[in-house]
Length: 330
Image (cartoon, rainbow, N blue to C red; front, side, top):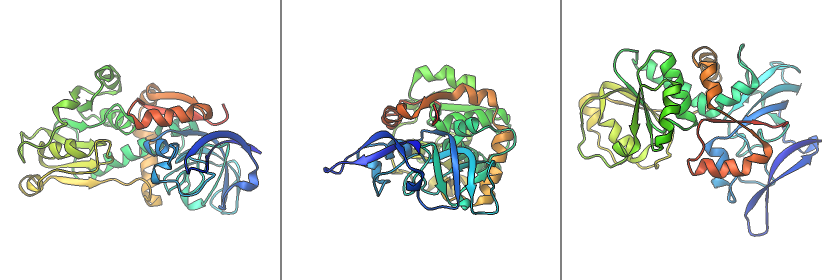
């Protein structure tokens, strides 16, 4: 038996969370059974914890949690053996497949990545999908020519999970970082992570007035989308790139093609869910090397399974700053 947070559906089709003991035989099919140590809370987790599952959860009862880190307990795959430390993000785990909000999880071996040397399970979940996505975004910008010294790199939604890690990584790599936030009280937090400039959300959160504005940003990690992304595209330097990682401001893009045609701007789509194994390894190795652990610790908010329903509601309202680390055994 093990403890888990389970979403159960009532006769009206609405789901609610209950923490209960589950028999290991109830775990879904998979090659590897993991003793989960830590998980985290991402925007998708908030959706999965909601009454209607955010359109992501198809079958109940369901154990959410799109990320987890822990120790292999049993494996039918030669790549993993009991005692190995592993991390999982993506692959629709926590949505279509039972996830990390329990003390045990059973998944396909292909979905796992060995925990990099020097990174603990707790630190890996302070990173989680949000930080993993941030690293993919930074790598994509670098692959398209971004280097320090070209000018400020903009991070939208900077106080959120993706933004916080992006700010810390970029600053550590020597970039000048401008963080966009709608919460004035987050300014000091972002400066502690390494931001040198704070941009108020209102300055960018409006429909494009002109297709091109002054060339300002050498690169951008955008977690907002919508009007803000459209506006930022017209402010990018010639040949610069934007890594699009989220849609907190909406899925629409009321932009023109002018920035692409006259300034050679690149809009790079970043997906973390179905990333190939080699890219995952590369990103996790970069995280262990390029994300300052003291900055990561400053982002951490400890939590337990009991805290998850409220945290899920809070993250959907944009009220979670930094990275939540869930001790599933706490």
